[in-house]
Amino acid sequence: MNLPNLITLARIAAVPFTIWLIVAGHLMGAFLLFVAAGVSDALDGFIAKRFNLETELVKYRCALASRALFGAAD
Image 1 (cartoon, rainbow, N blue to C red):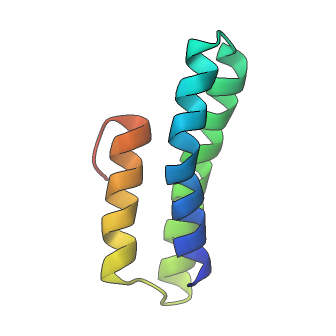
Image 2 (image 1 turned 120 degrees about the vertical axis):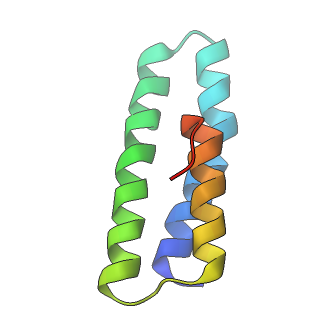
């Protein structure tokens, strides 16, 4: 498991927590987690490309994580 995979998995794992924050009325916390997810999306893409760590699995996980958090594909 490489670093981009771990970052992407963390982003996917953050989805239920983000939803819980919104439902509980902690909108600032949800917003900050959402921003962190956006930064992590750019970061894992940069690391994967810079250090030639791209895999098919990363591409599918990134698409899943983006759809889950942002409602759109990469």
